[in-house]
Length: 497
Image 1: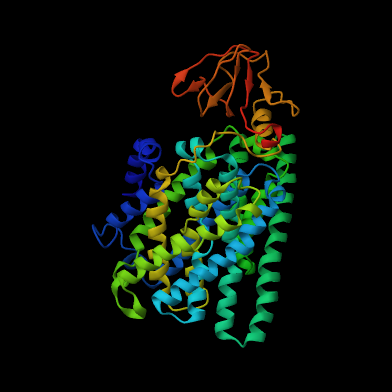
Image 2: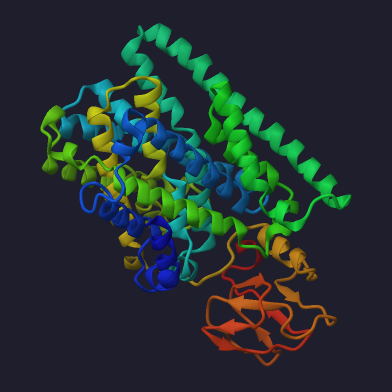
C-alpha cells in the first residue's frame, strides 16, 4: 500500500504541490489515517510492534530528522551559518526561549498541567521542523514568491534548533526530578557540555576528515559519481549512530557536519546538477508521514484523562500556532538581519512548523526518561496534526509581492552553480557569460520569473544555473546562442546579492 501511494502521488505530485499548494506531509498523513486502524486497518502499528511501538517511532523519527538536518546543512550556501550568525543567534536564543515559555504558558492555562510538566511538553514542540520547513520553502510557489534570504534562514533555523531542543527538555526534566542546585549543575555539564559542545566538536571533526578523504578519493579517481552523491546521506547515518551511542546530541552533530561538509562549496559543486538527495528526502518524508498518520492516538484526544478534551486541544493548537512565535519574530525582526522588512518577518514568524522534531523529543522523554505517555503524546500528536494541516495548507495564502532576486550576499550559490557547469563568473559584475565553446542547448538556464529582452540581448531577473536539454521560460522554449549574456536582476545594487 505504501508503494502504491508513493507511485500514485508521484504521478500527480506537481499538481498537488504547485497547483493545489498542498504539502506532501499533509497528503501523506491523510493517507496514513486511511491506512491505519481508525479507517481501513491495513496497517496497525500497535498490533505489529506491540509494546515496542514507541521505540520504533523514536528510531524511525531519528533517522528522518537526521537526514533532513544533513540536507539543511548541505543546502545552505557555503559558510552561510557563519555569515548570518546574528540572525541565527536571535532565532535560536531569545525567539526560541520565548517560544518555549509561551508554549508552556498555554499548556498550563488550557490543559491544566503543572508548571514543570507544561515546560516539558512545551520543550518538545519548541523546535521548528526541518521536514515540514523544506516542504514549505521549496516548490514553485515558494521559489516565485518567497525571497531566497527568507527560505535560507528558515531552513538554517529548522536544522539548527532541532538539535537545540535537548537543553530545554532536559532542564525541565532535571528540575522536576532533582533539587534545583543539583539539577542546574548536572544540566550544565551533562547537557550543555557533553551533549551540545561535544556534539558540535564531533560533527565538525568527522565532517572535516570526511571531506578531506572524499577530496582525496576524487582526486585519485577512487570513487564513482554515485558514491559521491550518496556521501552526505551515508555520513549523516554514520554520525547519527555514533553520537547516539555516545549519548550526545546526534541531531545537532549531523547539522553541524552538513555545514562543515559544504563550507568551501567544493561538495556543492559535485552535487549541483543531481537530484539524488531530493529523491531520498521525498521517499523518506512520504513514508514517515504515512506512518505518523497511522499511529496517531485518536482515542486519547477525547479520553478525558489529564484534561484531554477536543475543545482544549483545539484551543491549545490555536494558542501555539498564533502566539508562540509570530508576535516575537515580528517584534524582533529589526535585529534579525536576514529578514529585511515586516512582510518577510510575518512569513518567517508564521511558518514555524511543528512536526517530526516534536515527535522525536516527545518519544525521547517517554522512552529514555520514562515520562508518562499520557498526556505527552496526545498533546504533541495533536499539535503536529494541526501544524501540518494549517501550515501546509496556508502556503497559497501568502504572496509577499516581492521581486524574486538573489539575496544572499556573497555569491556562494552562484559560484557553485557556475563552477558545476564550468561557467566563468565575474565576481565584480552581475553578469555571467556562457562560454563560446559550449553548444547551444547543451548548457541552459532555467528562469523562474518573466524574461525581459533588452537591446543588448541580456536577460534580466533571477536565474538558476542548471543542466537541462532546453531553456524554458513559463514552459516556452527559448534557444540561446553561445556567448549570450545572462544578467541577474536585483534591487538595491550589488550589495543586495
